Structure formats: structure tokens, C-alpha cells
Length: 464
Image 1 (cartoon, rainbow, N blue to C red):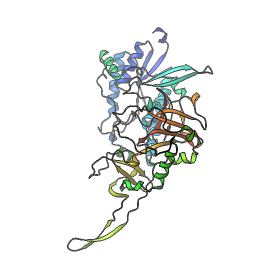
Image 2 (image 1 turned 30 degrees about the vertical axis):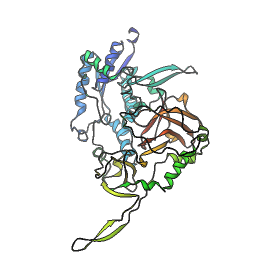
Image 3 (image 1 turned 90 degrees about the vertical axis):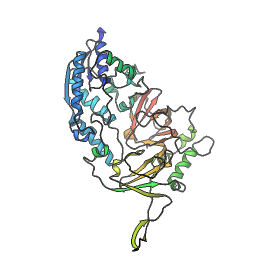
Image 4 (image 1 turned 180 degrees about the vertical axis):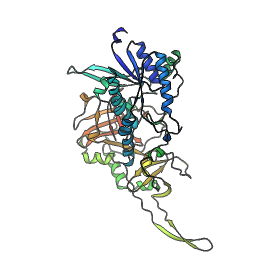
């Protein structure tokens, strides 16, 4: 396309097949393309492989650039990455929250620090290998509006990771492979004989690699032994917080009855996007619900199970020993190395035996260094129906569509990457933005990002 010859595009070339094909397509479309490889991490001791993966990635990226016939540059952004992504991660985990470093990497590094480097080299646009689409339209005021749409490949849609981008960042962004599917990307790479054609997709933390998270976090967060407490079902029978949440949820139903409090379990890789026939709640009742009750709905369960000790005599010599009395609400079932190393919904790394079903983390009490767990996918502590985004954390990609105080809308929402979109009612109040799901959700986790969509357009996001 001759009209593209005067448009200079920087492709963030990572050494992977996606960015390689993105570079190939841009070159074929006639753009003036150059590649920029960024190094964001030096410390190989934290990766499971124990080697400098970035060195191999750089080597492959340089070969790809040579094969396509585009200039190749290198930039070290490890200082910015540590300050703006890794330090933020440590801080969030220390508070008992679970951040998403890939979302932060895109907001703070790829489309900020990296973009500025590319612009210094003369780039008009920065392109990446994300599976999402961008569309630019003219708004009612005559100004351009940039839309982020889900990628055409439903198995690889990566729009979630771009949920914190601004209109300014999007105005300079291109996503060349957003409208094709992964198998086609592999085919194009093979057809062009690109060195990255058979390279496996990267895993783990963005630009760090696959890591053992507790070991990674122990760089700054000190291990501290604490109790793992299993919570039994009777705990919820008379628990004031649980019963109040259930009453509030039930009060929002159009014809009374009891609200559903537990998620039907379907493994996430087999689940499809929710397709409810309509909102299960009376929206007039939702509109009248005071902020105080929304706040209670959105709070995670808090646990306070006390264990009393008793003495007993053991063995022939009747040696006096101490043990915990049986408690109908729960039991201390193990020890951990620090509550800050665990996250809601986690089941690996607990080292708890003697259970028929999987055991999940349902709450982390950071001040008291206690992890609470529950057995089974349908444990009451694993499901929640409402979450809150603090006013300071609400981010609208489409600022022209931002909600006003008191407004209620129906959107589709996901709370983690690759989760099928869930139908939900979104309520804007002075105390924050509340998301009330049609069906309870497993593992809602503070610090993660909730992202809302209108059909396949991502409109906004916010940290839970």
C-alpha cells in the first residue's frame, strides 16, 4: 500500500511468533517498519529455568528482523520495569492483594516508556502482537474516538491485558494480528520461514518469565509461619455477615425467594460466556439500594474462628500434652510461610492432605498471618456476587461513555484473563462502581482488574 510508505511504525519485537507475524504483515502492507526489542529483566535467578531467557529471545528477534528486512534496535527498560511494575507487585502482595503485572506492563511500559523510546526513533505508531482489534470512529463532537475490540480468535483474545490504556495511548497503537486466529498466525510464520515459527508461547510474568511466585516475592517479602485454617459449612449457618449478604441479595429478586449464593462449578477452560435471558434482579430495587448495603455486598467474608486448647495425658507414662479442642466451625490443618504469598481461589502449594475434593484459599488475613481454606468448588466461601471498584481506580477507555452517579447499565464483565464474559449489572455510586453479577463468581480477588464490555468492545476497567 503506497499510502503507508510515509508512516513509520515501531514493532515491539519480542522473539515470539505473534510479534514476528505482526511485523511481517506491517511490512507487507507497505509501512516503514523498524523493530525494537526491550529488555525488562536481568535477574535469571528468579526464573524456573535459571537462565537468561531474554538473551535467546533477543537473538531470535534479531534473526526475524533480518529475515523480514527491517532495522533492529535494542533498549534496556529494566529500571523502569522494576520501579513501575515489580515494586508495585511487591507492594500489592504485601497488602494481601493480587495484582496483574501484565496489565501494568502494558500501561506503564509498552505503551508509555517503550512508546516514548520508539517516538524518539521517529515512530508514528507502535505495534504489538496482541490479539485484539482497534477501531477509530468519529464521535458526536467531531473528535476521533478509539475503540478496543476483542480479538477475532476467541481462544486468544488479549484485550483484557490492555484494559488500562488511555485514548492518547490508543491513538498511537496498532494491533496487526487482532483479526486473525492463532493457527493462521503460525501458518503465516511457516510460510515466510520466520525463525520464531515454532517458538512456544511465553508463560509467566510479563518479561520476567515463568517463576515460582513465592520465591520471587521473597526477594522483598519475608517468610513468616502461620496457621492454615479450614472453614466448615456450619460456620455460615449463623454467621451475621453471610446471612446479611444473603438477605440483601434476596431482597433484590423481583418476586422474593432466596438468592443463589454458590457458583455452579464448570472448569474455566470448558465454560462459555454466560447467556442469561435477562437480569435476575429487579433493577428498580437495585436503584433504591443504599450505598451502605452495596458496600456490605461487595465485602469479602471475614473469618474469626477461635481455637481453645486442652491438656491430656498420653502413653504409658501419661505424659501431659496439649491439643486443640474440636471446633464445629473449623480446624487448623497446616502451616504456611506467609499469608501474603497466597491468593483467593489458589489450590496449589497448600500441602494439605486427607481431603476428597480440592482445597482452595478463601481468605487471607494479612494482619494475623492466617490463611482460611475450604474444601470443594462449591464451598460457600469461594463465591461472591458483588464487587466494588474504588472511585479513584475507575478507568474509562471510552471516556465519552463514562457513567454518572446513580446510573445503572447492563454489561458483560470478566475478572481475570480468559474467563468467559459474565452478564452483570453495573451501578455507579459516589462510594464507587459496583458490579452485581447475574450468577455468583468464584475467586473474586482484591487487586485484580474487573473489565466491562459492551458486546465485544472493552469500555473500562478498575482494580477490585
